[in-house]
Amino acid sequence: MRLILTALIFLGGLFFLVTGIGFLVDPVSSAQQFGIEAIHSTGLAAIRADMTAFFVVAAVCMMTGAWFRNGTILLVPAALFGIALLGRTISVFADGTIEGFWMPMLVEATCVIVLLIASRVLPHRG
Image 1 (cartoon, rainbow, N blue to C red):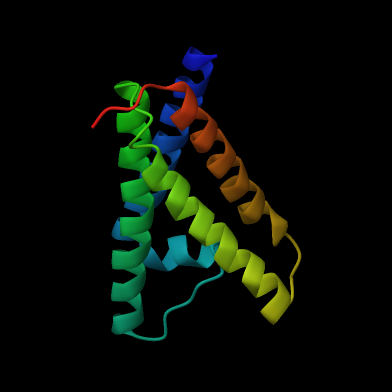
Image 2: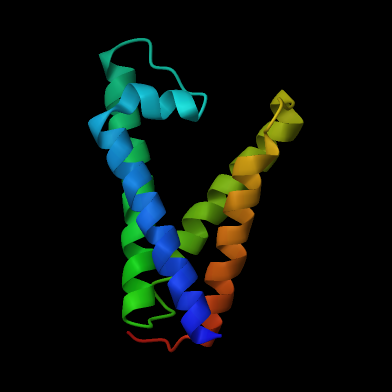
């Protein structure tokens, strides 16, 4: 079970790393895939900085936690994706939904569950 969890987390980390680099290199098209649009350079800078930070930090923590079998560091991306899921849930009630709204929520919920399970299964190191 540990091998499967660590492989899933490491591969997920690679996916999120590529996603984060995409926001750094090409924020316009990456943002459009998330339904985000910047109206001027300040918005582009925010997309480039914030989305890159979110995905790269999550990815590095996932890959490091999987590689070194460290359950403690996996709590960081679990928290990031958990807060993102909370924000999307609030948006469902505050703003309504569109077609396909559930897919990012499913990804985030799956990440939170897998990461929390792995954080319990893998050893905790300081």
